[in-house]
Amino acid sequence: VPGAEEYILESFKWLGIHFDEGVSFGGEHGPYRQSERRDIYKKYVQVLLENGKAYIAFDTLEELDAKRAEIANFQYDASTRGMMRNSLTMPEEEVDALIAEGKQYVVRFKIEPNEDIRVNDLIRGEVIINSSILDDKVLYKSADELPTYHLANIVDDHLMEVSHVIRGEEWLPSAPLHVLLYRAFGWEDTMPEFAHLPLLLKPEGNGKLSKRDGDRLGFPVFPLEWRPESGEVSSGYRESGYLPEAVINFLALLGWNPGNDQEVMSMDEMIKLFDIHRCSKSGAKFDYKKGIWFNHQYIQLKPNEEIAELFLPVLKEHGVEAPFEKVVTVVGMMKDRVSFIKELWDVCSFFFVAPAEYDEKTVKKRWKEDSAKCMTELAEVIAGIEDFSIEGQERVVMDWIAEKGYHTGNIMNAFRLTLVGEGKGPHMFDISWVLGKEETLARMKRAVEVLK
View (cartoon, rainbow, N blue to C red):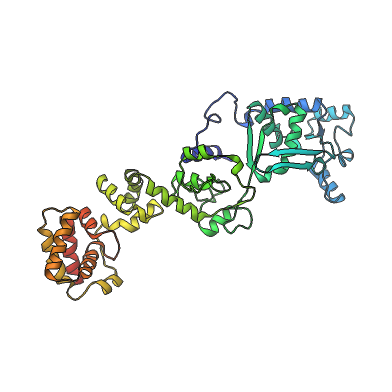
């Protein structure tokens, strides 16, 4: 669909997964869009036809539907192909004439019945499937002159010298067909190794994960926000505030483990530890809450400067412009309290905007009869502090409290209310140090005037 290719490339770029070759990256095995390789596929379709490994079928949709209605569980295979309209049942002249007339046709792979096909899967071991359960798959359609996935996949993997085919377990039933196609072309020696990964399951574990599960439980299932032409918007991990490293780490541990208890791993560590044999055969529950946990961990691991850069747009949204050094300092104090960058505003907005009102519950609990008098006295003490470092403030204020015989908790709780507007935040002298003496005194004065 329009925009899908750009979306995929942008997704991998955001995640930090780099391509060795491919669309827009170049390489020795191009072109990399299947739509640009149709002449290559046509050549290999002809090889199969000439070697009797495939045949041309002219059956219309109506004819196929009629046969399905006539035969229960109809399958186009060795037992039914003889009663259909194809090059195995029609004279060669008639086939050539229909093609010359421009009649639409498909090319089907001719599968011989009653053969046990062995697929060696790196995760599941040897898988044996009898060819009789396979139908004669369509490999090519004259209508658009393009191959189906089954043919394009085999030809591309062979010509591009692919060593491993790694895909979801839903493709396991098609693996025997791909083995047979490799044999049909005489490419057994270059057949890649197969690995069929387990499904991602709903958070409850019952059934395959879908976008609806994300909508229902409030988490994204797309890397980036996706806006197709249909107008239905799908939320993305990037826009939801996840760090790409956290998403990669979270996804990597769904259906795989490194063989130790380590959970937080860099890309390089995961590459070093990865062993496909440690992938699980059973589906992995999509524990989206674990994804949030990973995001929290990576916020803690990132340098304060990097988190501050990511926080600047959030500040701007709230009309705040602050010195970068101040933002870095605040982030360093508060980042351990959040799982997403955007949550920083809720926990530390008071560092940038003075309280316009005071939380009623906190006022009722923390603002005593003598709080206004005590805060006025404390403001005078603070005004006289020359060393306004955290330690310098704490030493002077604590000595004053002791000298006056005041209750430390009452003083500090009221002090916090004047600066923050409620009963939250880090160590009090951390707050006043970041605000600076002038702003601290202004907030204390206003609180006394408002709260009385």
